[in-house]
Structure formats: C-alpha cells, structure tokens
Amino acid sequence: MSVGQLICNDLGKVYDGGKRALSSVSFSVPTEGIFSIIGRNGAGKTTLVRILATLLEPSYGTASIDGLDVMEDADELRTRMAIVPQEGRPLPWLTPLQTISSYLMWRGESYRVSRRKAEEALALVGLEDVRDRLNYKLSGGMKRKSLLAMVMASDAEIIFLDEPTTGLDPISRQVVWDLLSRLSRDRFVFLTTHYLEEAESVAGRIGIFEEGSLLALGNMDELRASMRYQYSVRVSSGIELPEVDGRVLKGRDGRVQILTTREEAVRLSDQFIGRDIRFSVNPVTLDDIFYHLAGREIHNYEEDGEGGGWP
Amino acid sequence: MIRSGNQVMASILVNAIYEMRNYPVVLLNTVLSPLSFLVLIFLISDGALLGEAILGGLIMSMFQSGISLQTDLSHLKNDFKLQEIVVSSPTRPSIYVAGMALSEIIYSSPAIIILAILFAISIHVPFIQVAGIVLVLLMVFLSSVALSFALATISTDIVQSYSFSRLITILLTSLAPVYYPITLIPEPLQFLAYLSPTTYAAQLAQHLGGLTQVSPDMFIFDWAVLMVFTTVFLWAGIRKARWRDV
Image (tube, chains in turn cyan, green):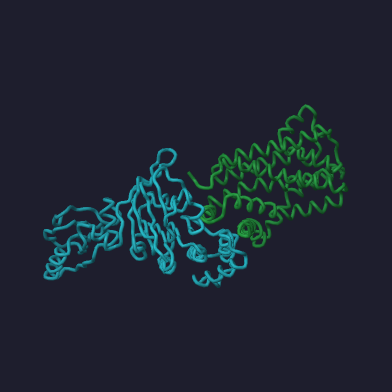
C-alpha cells in the first residue's frame, strides 16, 4: 500500500458569531499508523476532524487526504473514510450486531455480507457474547468497543476517532488502545484526545493544538528534540535545591520537578545520590512538552522560575 | 442501484424494523392516535361518519409519518451523532432522506394496514377512485415531509422539534376537517379550515370515496393547492437543508 499524505494548507474556521476555532493551520503527515491531535477542550481538535471528515466547511484554506480535496472530492473521500464522532453513541434500540450491519449497509454492502462482517468484527473486539443484547444494556466500554468494531468492519482506510476514550475507566481505555493499535496496522487513524498519555502510548505522530493553532508536530523523539530541556528530574520536598540549569516547577504536593538538559540531569543525580535524596530522572513526557508549549498550567505544578534554586 | 437499495434498506431497518422488533410497544403507539379518533367519531356520529373517519385515519397516519421525519432526523443527528457517521460514508443525502422517509411509513404500517382493511370492508368504490385516494395519501405524505423539512430549519433542538410536530399534527389532522366533512363547520369559520392543506386532501379523499361531492372546479383546485403547498415547503426545506455543516 503506497502511503499518501494528509495536507492542511492555511486551514481556518470562523463560526457564525465570530468564534475562531481554527487559525491558519498548515501541516502534512503521512497517512499511515496513528496520528493524534492533543489539546484541551476548545483547542480546535473537533473542528479540524469535522472538516477533514467532510462534515464541516472550512472558512478558508484547503485540506486534502491522499490527493483528494475534502471539499471538491468529498464523495470519493467518503468511500474511503469512516468516523466515530465525539459523543457518538450506538442507538439504544439496536443490538451491536444490528448497529454494525446497518452501518455497513449504509456503506453499500448487502444485508448478508454486512451481517457476516459485523459478526467477525464483534468477535474481534470480544463482543460476540453480547451481539444480540440491546445497546442500552451495554456498559460504556462495550458501547465504545462496538462503535470501534463498526469502523473496523468497514473497508474504510482512513478512520477518524474523536476522543474515543473520554469517560472510560482505565481498563476499558487500555482495551480501546489495543484496538486502536490493531486498527492502525493497515489503516490511517486520525485520533483526537485530551489524554496526553493516550497520545504518547498509541500515536506514531502527535500534533499539539492550543486555541485553534498547531503548536508542534512530530513523533515523541522529534517533539522532545524541539524542547530546550529534554529531561525531567523529580525530587521530594524538604530539601535544599542547588542552583540548577533548567526550569523549576513546584508541585502542589510539595514535590519539585526540574526540566533540564541531559548533562545537568546527570550532575543533579550525582549530587542527590551523594546527599541520599530520593529522586527520579526521566526523559520529558508529552505532559511536559505540552505544558512547555502551551505555556499554561495543565497539571499539578506551578512555575517557580528558570535557573533558580529552592524558593 | 443495488448499493442505493442497501443504503435505503439500512435506514428502514434502523428507523423502523429494528425498533418495532426490539420495542414491540411502539406498535401500539403508532395505531393509537388514528384509531382513537376513528372510534370517537364513529361513536359520536352513531356510525354515520365511519367512512370519513377511516379516510381521516389514513390521512392522519400518512401526515404523522411525514412530520415525524423531522423529529427523527433531528434526534438521530443531535443525540446520537448518527448523521455524522452517515455523512462520512458513501451514502448520499437524497438516499438517506428517502430511506428515512420510507421508514416512517413502515413505522406507521400497522395503523395503515388496519385502516386499509376497514376501508375495504366499508367503502366500495371503483378501482380508479381507490387509486385516486392512494394518490391523495401519497401527496399528504409528501407535503408533510416537505413541511417537516421546513420546520427543521427553524427548530433548534429535539424538544422544540417534538413540540412543533405535535402541535402541527393536532392542528392539521384533528382540528381540521379530516375525520369529518367540512360542512359540519359553521360557514363563517370554514375559511379557517381551508388554511390547512389536509382539508383539501380530506375533501378529495371523501369525494373519491363517494362520501361527499365537490364540483369539478373545486376538485382541480384541491389538487392544485396540495401540489403548491408541497412544492413551496419542499423548496424552502431543501434551500436551507445542508448535508455538510457550515
């Protein structure tokens, strides 16, 4: 399968009333594996997905997937794509088998073929035992899995998933992540999430969105490389911190995080070992990168200055 | 062609057959309104208006089917995001709407079948006139689909949609002379009845059923009004309706 590109060029959306949801977004990514967009609520993720999934007209700019324009070639694109929208729910009066087979019929499959493919997809996600149970009797995780099975059963090569794990418990979320990995083996998955660990664990490429703008894009190594400080040192409270070359963040629980360079992390580690201080050193996470780029507080740390010592 | 057939069938399965199969209580719901009015008119008129009441029940069933399309489309779109799933698929808007519209008739089929049986037992007219009545009923359905499209452009949520459809159904199929002849309305107030397109449909159906007589001019005028009404509302709805949001 030849790999194409998803290309956005100066893409923007201003809703009626003047609300700017996307501001001149330009990027390109290969249409393979999982590409995840992360950002807070209202960052523009859903607007971008809806434009790319041919559900919403952009106000300006262009977007294309594998050479097909989302406005001009929508009909052709729709034969190749599928979406599980944010807040999408299976209809309560249907069973998972009926949900999936109907969807496949909307994609043009016959009743018989749809039933067979639906049964196979349900078995694949482990829902064969509840295939004839009404959707309203299923747990939240099962409902989400049945929607994922729906797009898995289709022949769509481009899958849009808008916050598919929101509201799920950690175990269900892990199950969905496994399904996403399976789904991405032979398809392009465009995933939006505000769970940073989700993007970090499943996505090959990540785009960071904030207030309708794309702040950064790349795989985890590229995103880390774009950071001035690529290591995170965490120490417990109540110690006197030496002068550091880095960014010191004080946690609300009293713990301290230092974003710093590799060399400085090694130096600090030596000092802490010498002073018998409990600490940990890790490469920066997506959390740290997002915080750094978005420039706002997103987790339990407050900025305490750059290059400073203990306050 | 086969593909379009499968797509239409998907809408019918989702919006009618599976719902009726999985929630059999809805079958009762669909027959309740038209048959209750029929029984009421039958009892009040001491059986004299049975024919009008049967035709009224058929008109109400067809009208209700069309007007329900708007609430169902809105419900599926806003509460379940089904329309987003369908828009991002190879289904074309016309196929989706046609399938959903057909599903509404199938949903009302229990009532329509009962009324059709009562019609066959009570009203004996030549086949050509029966065909004319079927045509009137199809026009009623089409005009209510058109009206529901137009309403969809002004209702913003499901509560509003349901309120609109209930209000319109009561006004145009219960108050208007659908279950009874217009001659029962005092003459000075008859002009109010003529504001409703269902009055013209009922007048045509009652004439074709051999229950009342209308002049040839009025016969043509009734058809013309039904067609104009359907065309105007269909035009208004299609002008505003959008498959892709803006």
